[in-house]
Length: 419
Ligand code: NAD
Image (cartoon, rainbow, N blue to C red; front, top):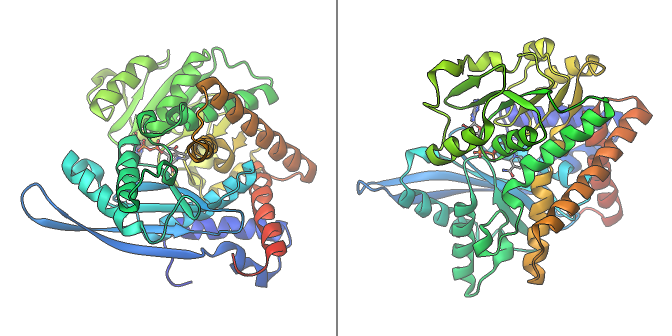
């Protein structure tokens, strides 16, 4: 399809082809499974603080409606384009199907560097984007959530804008909202907690003690910082962390609670300490027990894959590993245990699903209940992926994606061509 393109979309296509070959999916059934059902591009004009008008391009891609409404985050970043958003929507589909949620995948985004906007401009842009999306989304057609560059406040603005157009409060249009605006306890922490929980499961499989083990975390936003904090609380020494401003390294272990506070108040790690600075490019290949990429796509290419020195690779980010790197990691699977992205970061959409269910029912759960149910679904998916990969002697990514793709294929086969 000519509408989509770019390196991230190409990557989603290549990954799918590997799975389609493995599942022996016929050529004529492939496009129907892979290609998004709809995509919309919108222009979002806002008044800048200096009195000028600026227009930002926004997107939303809905991959399929076969299993229920679509579900997916909204990314605000300068890298966002239609191809990237489509790839992220496709990955969301395999992820939701893998963990057994009644959703298809979606994703949205605006091509904007959010730190270049004042708070008022950010609110204007968020509200305008949601207003443009009103004809295409709804609690039973497409439910939004946060992703890179967006947060609880932006979700609250989305929800409020949608609600004001409906003439009533519709909390279930968006997940990842503040608890004060209909959000669930445990959503903010859900993705990072899930990553750390699955690292513990992988360590158990490898009979590796986590207490005293070392970890490196790339990206110190929602996912990276919470995963680092959870691992720190399990006794892991987090020796390196990074964000878009640079990387910090301390072989004896960084003070993660202090770093979380620092990054929270200043929005980045910049200026934390001159003594701990490391070349960002070097951090991925540091010797460590656990490596967590939790920032952007395609950071592990073939060269880096050959040089990784970790025991567990836990993909907190979506699409951090290129297909070329996958071929190398597949050969190194006895050395490096991969927790593939669609499993590793699925705690976020699992708890988003819980938030949607609670909003629809107007019945809210305690945080312990949210966490218990999150870990239950993650454990089940982890066991399914391991069993499948071992049974068929395939790479963990192949096992995970095959389960997701198969579930969507089976539903499409029974329903017919429409959804
Ligand atoms: P975020 O905006 O909260 O944080 C992103 C972090 O990555 C920031 O610290 C930023 O400085 C850093 N970063 C950006 N470019 C970088 C680079 N080149 N090198 C190093 N660090 C860099 O975003 P997030 O919500 O934590 O999302 C991170 C990743 O996790 C994304 O791939 C996202 O799609 C994925 N994810 C997020 C969720 C969620 O619930 N937020 C759920 C599933 C997957």
